[in-house]
Image 1 (cartoon, rainbow, N blue to C red):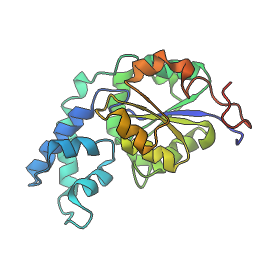
Image 2 (image 1 turned 180 degrees about the horizontal axis):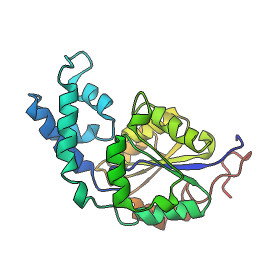
Image 3 (image 1 turned 90 degrees about the vertical axis):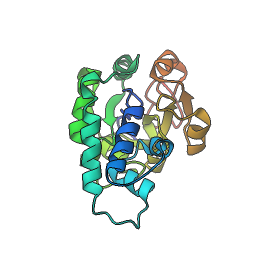
Image 4 (image 1 turned 180 degrees about the vertical axis):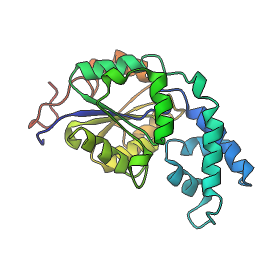
Length: 233
């Protein structure tokens, strides 16, 4: 295993903050405003992708893209109405602080824009535990492309083989896998353990509070010792 820091990378929407269904409704309404009738269930399963990937996934890559920017702006406007009442999941801040205390470099790696990420950070109130934040604005392609995971690792000089990604969507799991990072998944975004494991998750927990309770038996128990593959200190 390579020398270098171990990073604990965290998705935010649906993982640390209870927003998956807020995003679903905002995207569903934004799409309807521009004449796209997409079932809410399909929208929900696409949440976790960045806007660039989400619209391709829901509307097809061969579509006319004239209103993509308008749909994305409408989603942002609708979703921003929720910002004053954003709610972190129980245990979210405690988990980040405990990971930092155990020696992980804690990074938020979100498909949100920088403006959205700032609202999410305010809701979490855990900047003291963070080593860095990366957003969709930092990369050319968002999740499930691995770019965001690579960028998060680069921010803290992290080593993929020693790092862990925590997320709630299959897109998180796939992005982490493509970057060579193990993934711990939570079901708080609305997907079940079977789906998350099928995508490649090494562990699945009900939510971050459950993960925190089971931390000593998790991949996040301690940063792996450099040079010892699979070893936990």
